[in-house]
Length: 479
Picture 1 (cartoon, rainbow, N blue to C red):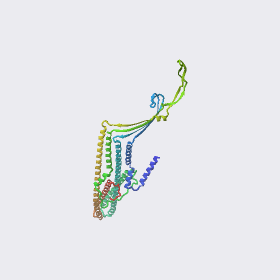
Picture 2: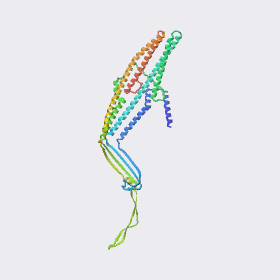
Picture 3: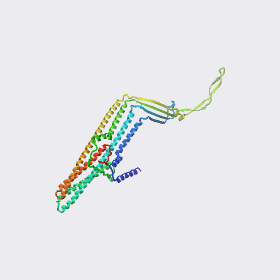
Picture 4: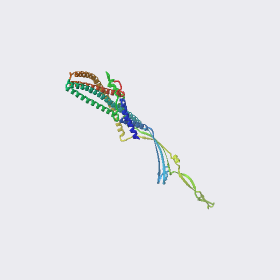
């Protein structure tokens, strides 16, 4: 039955993937976070840390333990409830309850609970950081698909234009109006552009495969992503500088929050080590009872034959009459179970004080190591801040460079487009050879490629900066 359910679930999942026509960036991220195995493992670790915290909270409560036994004894032994020797088989039962509570231990349990809380916060922030990394990787793969789709579209347009030109030249060559060499040059250009189309298609297929693997999909079949409007407008700009982004990210990024929580955890660990120098005071109590088969009580007295115990004497001191006494034979029975349980109850209560005097210097060593761990965790926090600042500064510099490149590429594309249009007119009139025409076309293609690369580089880097500013990863916004 379980296998059938799993197979049905797999078919449903596969069918839903194949039936899904459009995947938005938001849907890709949501799907990845919901189905990624590593994310599930991270969440399991969070649950495990929650269990540790609950356990440490419960250790502050009194302990309660019960004990019960049922046994038989053969041979000579002293019965614990009768203090008499027993030689026959004796049944015994013991019942016992004990409880203890720590009144003071140098606040070790309190600090252990606080350390668990800090560890839980750090684990949650680590999970958030892991999910953020997956989201950024998904966004990168998503933009790669969009980029290669644009590259494929551009390559196909260039190939179509060259094919039209090749057909026109073929007519002119057949009519004897143009040299055969010019046609061969155009054919070579068409072959090169056809290769560019194939390369762009291959890159697009690989980009789809990368995204499908990140989503843990069984295949790329049916995977089609949404193509949002990514026009940058006439005057794109950066909305904030690197310092502003860093100041905001310093207060919100999970990597920083995790490092701060780990500093707190190491501090509580130091308090724990120092608490081992303090005396420990505990309160203990117990109650117990039991039953013994050797415990007997008088059941009845059975009359026996009269026994002579003496004589009566005459005044002269002569025995006259024999004096008899009635005898009784006692019969015993085992004391009832309920009566023994009631009568054998014993209780105890005690205060125990443990004072550490010398333990091989282990506590002092633990304190020294804990101090080093506190310092090391502080270094890790400083390192996380430094890495965050470097990442933001690098992303900002890359975004600014991409913006400058994009703005310069717009002018370059316009100039290359006009140059190619002029070259095409001259070539069509026969005043330019095919080599110069192809060079002009290549310059135009390179300018378009540079513009496209700068555009997507700027979009991705601004997406990263928006992420550091606490904005959700999305392409549906004004750029």
